[in-house]
Image (cartoon, rainbow, N blue to C red; front, side, top):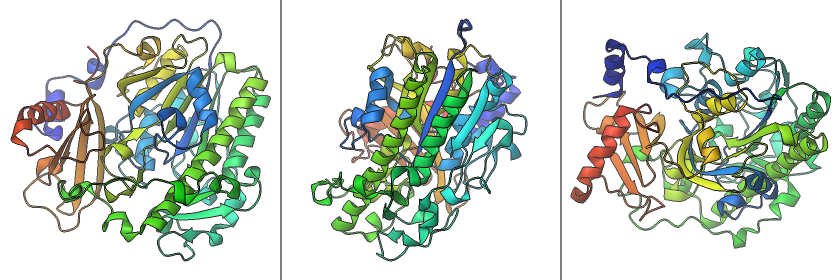
Length: 496
């Protein structure tokens, strides 16, 4: 049964989303309202030190010691606007109607109560600093973009010298100055970098951190929901020079892709052709150095906000959440950036720290999704969430990280498909429409309902997703099982 036909079947059967929602006993309202500090990075894969990666992120690692680290957290769409629209509305892309970087979710869902809007309706001081909804470039923030004014009581749009120095940014591929443009232009598509002059606070992310600290000082006497959106490490990778020095290129290890890796996968799975954009090893290391430098720069700004939270005596009454909007490729399968359904693009960092939690410093390998953030924060703060949310609260995992949980996490994407495909599957012959389900052991993916190819990876034996088992007769039974889970959708995958 196709996803469209299944949706029609549910309507005919009279089963709305609310009727299918997972029910738990209501949480008592906290004696003192909890604050929320939501920290969001842009295009940041699970590359932090606390995830066992080589990047120097001491401040995010410290938060992991105060909270629960989620090792299998997944975005619903590996692109900025669809993902941000999803976790800020609690709706999946098929419901929000957002599958590109141009569409506003209110075009399809004008009455939706967003995550920050819920807190605003319940008496919280709700503000954002920096990028939460999608903006193409830092210099665009505050003048255009896809912000949702209804969501916020106050917005702060810092602008740093990185916006004024855009003419100094160089393309890693061509070695020439990168023309920084908005949307689908070279800004989004070109790997470019700048080892910036000046202090941290002169850059946009540095100013974002300082403005967030100012808000913490000024509004500590009223319950608050503060969302802080950093632009880094999104390309162009801009950070002060000192951060580049942390990562000598000659010491960086390139992604190891065995011979035949791409040949065993459907063409629809890839967005980068030729592999690595044709970059040589030195150019690839330049990308990695600049990306890691931007991550460490963002981590430092992250730490300034956490320090201010402590200085103001707010840490013991504030829920802190750290996420990225999606993952990122650094050469795996010859891919760079996002817009795939491989693990590197779908998986995200997620840390939740709740005052007094007994699981601080621990990790969970259970499957979770960014769409779960909304119901989680609502429940932790004793607020009644809308009935149409399509995620589930993670509060039970915060109490018991090893408990039985979801059967699957779902990610989807649409991108161009050169040359079309053979068959009569759903969608344009020039579009690759991919849907993927990740279980604790496997990832199963279909392109154009299987007409443009399928993928199956066994993460127990093949964590790098090098070997596609979808057409292996020995895997036929698991393919059918995961296909059924993919088409049954998120409702069927909820904890029982």
